[in-house]
Length: 123
Length: 109
Image 1 (cartoon, rainbow over the protein chains, first blue to last red):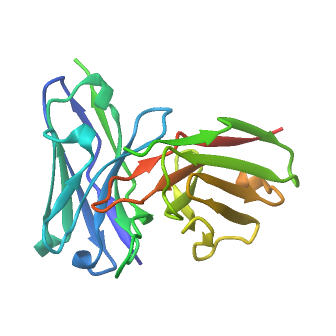
Image 2: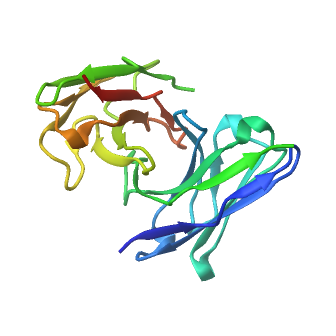
């Protein structure tokens, strides 16, 4: 069965960086785009960007340009999301999310989610 | 950026009644819209894609409609397990610049 298992909760100080991992199993890692979505406490969903695990190509939401880096290690089927220059507004649950299988056309929506990683930014 | 606006923010409905949720896009997105359901402490679950196609395993109580800028999610007869927050999400761009609506909470009346 498809599983996305993320790294554990983090507490960071303002100005620091955080790197969250997402290890996939149960499917061909390089066959599906991986997105990152965050949700601040009591708030809605916010898309951060995606990575093509096959090519390593990325596309980031404009809001996070220059501050987020998404990478992957295909040898261990793991995607990473690193966010820098953290502020208290970045306190949220960060989730990796698998894109549905898509061969052509526009089909950028999600079928499997990681369990989420709580990142708390506090001095 | 395409802005997605959901209404109402909260919908109070009695079990067995119909619920109608709205989602509006700031510009036309054709039918490139998905709906998700999120229960407390859980990850969202895909309900609808392509504005009107139910995802695998989703009850026929859920139906989606609309195109361009106006979309609706209808839950025909609310069951206890349907009380949750619902989000719409557009995916009209290449490369993807995805955006979600702010959510509608469906609560028990």
